[in-house]
Amino acid sequence: FLDIRNFSIFAQNKSPEEIIAYQNNVFSFIIEIINENKGIVTQIMGDGLMAIFGAPIEHDNDCQLAVNSALEINKELKRRNEAGLIPETVIRIGINAGEVVTGNVGTSERKQYSVTGQPVIIAARLEQINKELDTAILISESVYTRVKLNFKPINHQAVVIKGITESITVYQLV
Image 1 (cartoon, one colour):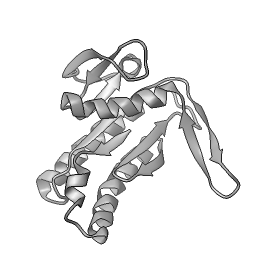
Image 2: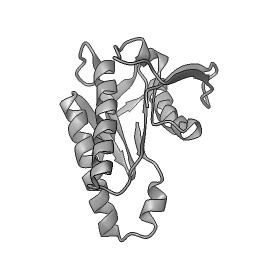
Image 3: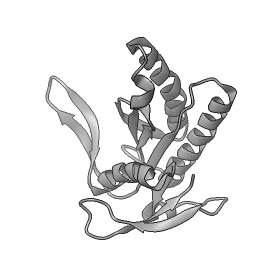
Image 4: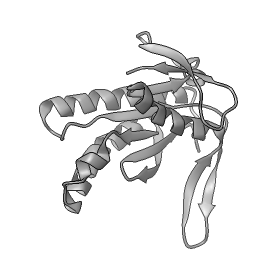
């Protein structure tokens, strides 16, 4: 899950056209990076999006591809911020891994490819926990054990996630 921090504050004094232009500008390179890493954006939800890696086609290194995407997105965002190509933008990303249910959900009039299950809920909550921890990219231990990083995570700690009985360990990458 990815979310643009303080989007509501940014949007409050902008015209609808300015807001859409900004979203298209930011999401265009984010989606491109996700696609290049074999991910699929399943939903764009206002100032955020959900992307999946490993469904409907599984790869040997889907967790690595997801983490690579997050790090590339953060790097490109920083570059565009510093170059003045976009208004100052900060994002939050939460990544989790696990077995999920996928498929088309809806009616004959409106269907969409959907992913659901506890791993999805945890990923969404990790994105939100970034706000509480003042972090940008959090990954769960289930992702951390499946990836190779060329750096040590900044921090790791146990967090309690609403609706989940046991705390989980998260790793801060940015």
